[in-house]
Length: 149
Image (cartoon, rainbow, N blue to C red; front, side, top):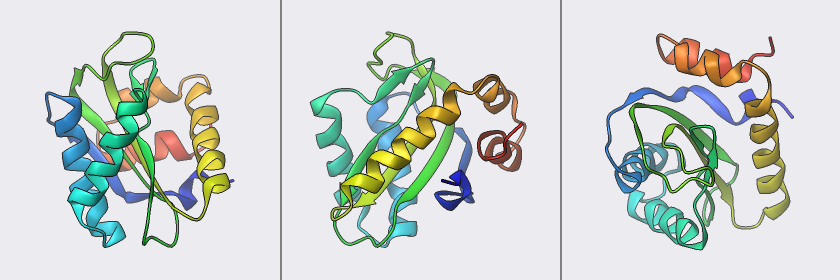
């Protein structure tokens, strides 16, 4: 599975200036809305519903909010590096500074899990998070995640 099939360079927000989890999800939902041609409020509500089941803050300063969305034909992913870390109710209790958003079609539960697993494996690769945090712009943030070192 190729990460570049899911996250495109234009789907990267290198400096997202928010102070809460809800604000981060609102801004990312609005951006995803343009990519998915789905109303931003529908995306946000689905993400908040998923967050109520348990935080998608996976630890090490990373959150992977994800949900199924009716009306999209393929998975859509985004990444944002936050200007300041925020509380995301992460499993390790640490604030989050990198947020990946994943939307997948309602009809495709298996690809949803496969993409999440692929993202998780990449994030566990040595140095990936350090490179993402040190990136100077959207292009370097993008390449630090999708390109093998």
